[in-house]
Image (cartoon, rainbow, N blue to C red; front, top):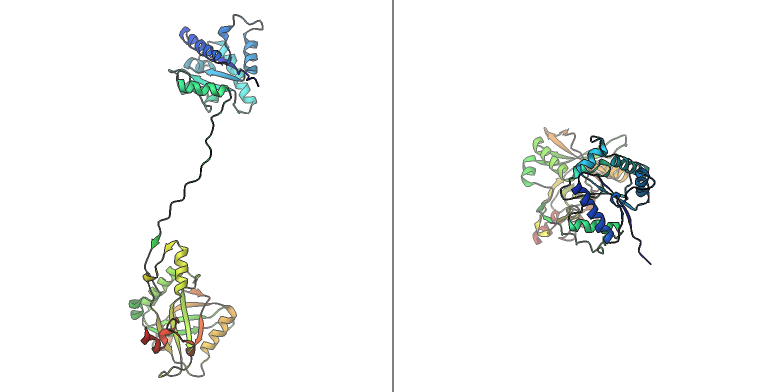
Length: 358
């Protein structure tokens, strides 16, 4: 198939004889390389007159090269009242751009070595311009006129994502030994809603209010208002214990596997050697006819949750509830002492036999 010679019209201002010669040289060079350039210097006097000649060339050309100089710019914007030809051509160019909805594929601004970007008319400043005195830019213009697009290289593979710098840390359980020693833990209290409209609260009884607040603020900072990963473990262990009066144990410790799950969800490397878990045990000795623990069981099974709250024991039997530090729990363990059969049991510390083995 025979290639078509692109038709190109050159619009420029007659700044000087030297400038006209440069434009003519450009046109001649393009023509020598197969670009069918139209230029006023090739015409003596077109029979239809210059205005119609300009209009015809602008319409029929594939491209219009606009040679931008200071004089061209001033005649386009009206600050130089000479050069009716440029005024007419620029009006045609502006109208074509307007009709095309500013979608410009036809009008290409070019400059010579001494040209400046600021002399490109505003409607064309968003278009690629070429310095035709630069051989590399001239070649780019030439191939554009020929319709030859730059070949994109094949799309390669994305780089592998860099490995994240993983953090490691030492993890402890929920018992800060010094804080708990100062807080003076005295057991638990069951606080029930006797209208049976909301879950019960399990009050952790301390004698030192300031330390109690510190303990719960530490838990809240770590768990939030709800123990989502079920990290904090609370168990009630009933049954006869050799050498102990009637009652039950309250054991506060941790679920190690759930702590690991929460830590790994935060993209932190975890080494089991860096975990230290401390627990606290309290032996409760209620009267045999006390129903507090049983009511707590019944309400937990109904609501499937309860709230942990800090409390202060005053004068041996008065309980002050510390508001605003409640933590919702959806897990509690009710067990029998006789079910503890291994040193791997999370409640094995309650049995002296397994403590000795450890």
